[in-house]
Figure 1 (cartoon, rainbow, N blue to C red):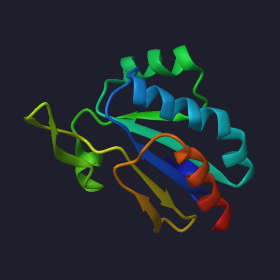
Figure 2 (figure 1 turned 180 degrees about the vertical axis):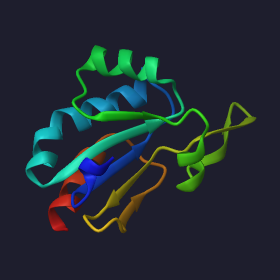
Figure 3 (figure 1 turned 90 degrees about the horizontal axis):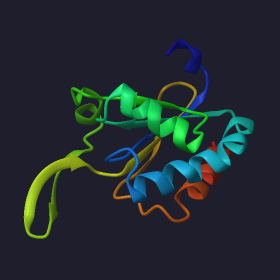
Length: 131
């Protein structure tokens, strides 16, 4: 991704394409994408879904940013977002909704873990503007 060199990067990890929370998060980033662009930042989403699923998800909601298909989980492991989760007393491995703000030199400047979707895109945008 050479086109990212010298730009701020918002790298957001989400559990699954076309699910309620992930869709709301994607829409929030979509709706603020021009503001991120004006602030010199590129948005990239990551999940373990396939490229074909990502293509459908992007087309359905008009996302103007890239979605990385981390099917082997290497990127999730590198950012420590592949974690044990629990639902209805059942434990399983999954992506912890997280966002990383990376500056133009490639340094991670901010990390949001266990993201709550409402207001998150706006919080990240404010941090991008403060860099």
